Amino acid sequence: MNYLTKSDTRLHGQDRQEKTTSRKSNLKAANPRGRKTSQRNWWMRVSGIFLLWATTAIASHAQTFNTVVTFDGSNGYDPVTIVQGEDGNLWGATDNGGSSCGTVFNTTLAGVLTTSFAFHCATASNPYALILGTDGNFYGTTLDGGATNAGTIFRLTPGGSFTLLYAFDESGGGGGEPEGITEGTDGHFYGVTQKGGSFHQGTVFRMTPVGVLTTIYEFDTTHGSEPSGRPVEGFDGNFYGTTYAGGAYGGGTVYKINPSGTLAVLHSFGESSSGYGLANSLTLGLDGNFYGETLSGGPDNDGTTFKITPGGTFTNLHNFIGTDGSFLAGGLVQGTDGNLYGTAELGGANGDGTVFEMSTTGAVTTLYTFDGTDGEGPFHLIQDTSGTFYGLTNSTTSNYGTIFSLATGLGPFVKTLPTVGMAGETVTILGTTLTGTTSVTFNGISATFTVVSPSLIKTTVPTGATTGPVQVTTPSGTLTSNVAFRVRP
Image (cartoon, rainbow, N blue to C red; front, side, top):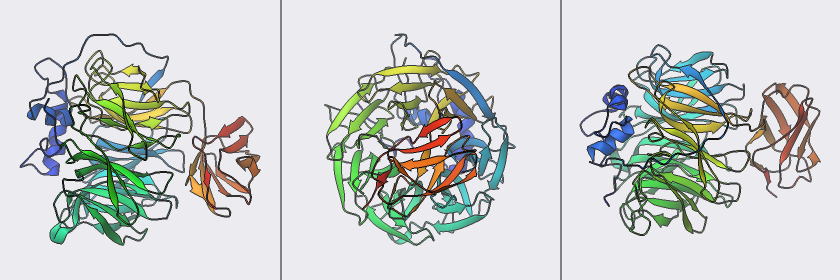
């Protein structure tokens, strides 16, 4: 079996703007078997890989689907990421629109969208990732822009004040084209670049909140190349991530790296016994293990899901066969029921993609199948504190992408930011209908708190608190955090 590398699938000779402009038409292009394809699958067609799947029917759980926002160009197009903000709205970025180089937007859950910032091409362009920082501001990356057009890192306040924190420069071994970033428990930001470094295979970096950046690792193909997504911090304080290519068999790697830059390869994709490549960002599970997915690979080359322990024990969980989805590109999210949820950009009954639920042992159920009228190419799923899942679809010939919601019956919860802290440290609690809260506890120990808004509480880790759930008592009932808050000594 032949395996893709990300470099094989790049649109050589086109700049980023040309790629994103062509994305709309690429999505509607049909392959010889009549299935529609996104730009990401266009890469696969260029490499000669055509997805084959069986016709087995997959049962669906009861769910409620809604299109929340339909992008029309004037409010941005090609959405790339969303995250829940302190105001209870969904914040995100579009790859294009605004001044033609992308936007940051926020939308109510009812779909009232506001453009918060429009990127100016000369400064920063084509945003890729956006996260909510512990200070309440948003931090993100752009694939292009900056003095050498190698990408940037920025900060944006909820009020729309933009600060360029760092502009990449590949000359002299610097990184270029940054993907996602993570705020570490040490207060620094960690991320990767797809390009640059002394070996021109990408880098891992650490950055202070004011933009002082240090490259802590340069990939050299042996340990992987073209790192993908964002590094995820484990319970041990190390960071875990994936690369699209390189490693022992050329199919990419899963790696572990400490904050000082010591890196170890935990798994290499592409071996005949596993053969699953093009891995995306990892998800830290409640059990301390990491869960991930691959764009391709498996017996039908429709993608796979896997689990890997911090020590490197790798388990293939599910091989997709097309009817349950194909081309997994959006990452997994662990829901409050302990199951994992994700999207496939292709496959399903209509070939337009699916939303699926998976147990931690790999049992997959298709929750929703797209048919084109409700969007195509779903990706990037998150769970809002209302309990509902929200995701994005690619732009098509009929629209410029959408934001959709999928309610599966899971109830509301609260989320802490950060999820690790010491006694006396301030913690933000995100939720819904928090007005009238009478109690906040950390694993049963009462904490002082202030209700800032219906979606936001500020609290302090109480003395004597131990690792466990945070619970918020409201007039409507008690809400529990989706992950245990870990108390550091």
